[in-house]
Length: 344
Image (tube, rainbow, N blue to C red; front, side, top):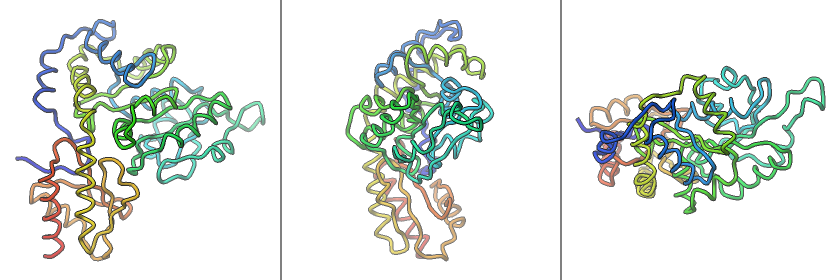
């Protein structure tokens, strides 16, 4: 049965041309460095983001935590926005894997300012009680739907350089951010020392993410990837999907953004709905019901009965996400079904 699935862009299945590439992939044992398709993916990925080297990893959370594990000394401190995925949705992994504590800056949209970063930078030789700051993390595109501007990223990078600290970019949806800003992705990644980005989500690969940075950083990360159980064998079948994701799927994300804008505009015409247009920058639509008597659990059930999948609201906010498998006609179907529900 075909569903219109708006829960996330993580639900994307693979188009036939991606499956064909996977089926025909040339593979080898990647732990031995023998998988030519993985090698091709890593070289391609590094080139696209303007870094010396890249590493194929199983997931975005894996890539973020591997980056912290590689950058940071145990017992050190990472400065990060409190709303970023690394702190909000990665199961406290940084304390377990890298052995670091996260020093958070209050920022619902992921933007952190130089003055707020500087107030939190600490060095262990300043005071016997202090941990040392080892890393600054930013996220673009942000999970709120916001996209950090180039100047906002540059501001963070400049303060990091001032104190000789590296910057890690959680770029799970970095291609969405680049599409939103209408810039080459290198314009974003030049403001970080390492970057993680997903090949799944809007790019439709079934599994996998990339970590990119200097050759020295990636060499260290490769060994730590093995330590974490991420040394895969014939992973070229997955890497083949990643190559298609980068070469074909990354260039069409503006279609998802356009469909999200259409969805937002149509939803906002409904009297009981208020759309967050300020954070309508990628493929995510956030909105609230202005009436307090809307039973959102019943809405989730009603939609499912009509072959539409959505998540219930979180913190009073609903989120619909467009992607490759959500077309313009699907957007209009969703809006009409929502009207039916509210009018029932």
